[in-house]
Image 1: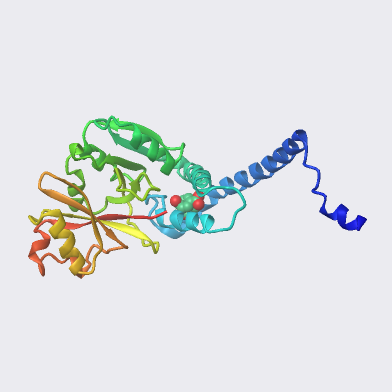
Image 2: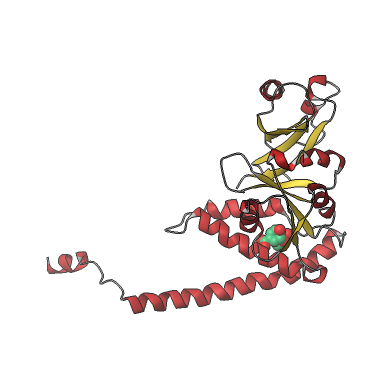
Amino acid sequence: MALNARAQTPPSPLSLSELRLRIDAIDAELLRLVDERSALAGDIAAAKAREGGDANACLLRPDREAMLLRKLTGKPRVAASDAAVVAIWRELISESLRIQGEGQGGLHLDFWAGDASGQLVKWSRERFGAAPSEGGLAEPVQVIAAARDPRHIGILSLDPRAGAWWARLLAEPQVRVICALPERTPERPKGFAIAALKPEPTGDDVSYWVSDSRLSEAALTELLGQRGLAAEWLCSTGGMKLFGLSGFVQEDDSRLDSKAEKALGSLSGVIGSSPRI
Ligand SMILES: C=C(O[C@@H]1C=C(C(=O)O)C=C[C@H]1O)C(=O)O
């Protein structure tokens, strides 16, 4: 009886100073691991140069990042939120890319200076972390031109006042949409990140398709649905329309063949894709 009573007594809670000692010990261990992870970046850069061939290729691998983040947020936890896990790992990845890119001047974010919202800057930092430098350019077309350089990432608004800059990517096959901003929201994206890299499928992606079709947005959504593509209209301006298509849709997907289906528009195509996180 006495034994039972003792077993049920809750353990006396740790004092504040004992708890702070625990935190200090965990921080020391975390710092060692963060440093160990960061130190691998130099070896990763060397392996990419050895195995990737193209020394000027973009170091960023959004597909690998998305799969890594999904794996982490899929793991059981006691207290840490998904938002905290994503924010911490985004910063770790940013640091890895900073170290990998040291020899090439690091990553740079280009914004269109006409976008005064400030929101895009915040969302871009959430996505790309603190390490990249940033600057504003006078026109969206300059942001696209800068993104031909693999050290640059363009950040552009989907506000119709920015114009149909995204339609220009039809003529810029090496610059693709790589990410929707803000990254983690069920709502329509407000902006895109663009870069000189080819998106790879991650198993849960949205692809972006542009068209000059004269059909209404609703009719075009319907037509795409009949062709097996779940489409969401995102933006229209200057006679061009932009849609998100559920899944990783290849640029040569026969369902988007506008020669076979003229109503899809005479100027149309996939301009990139982004993983859902
Ligand atoms: C480490 C790599 O380089 C980058 C950094 C990553 C990371 O820190 O986990 C992941 C993907 C890449 O954007 C890689 O390509 O694996």
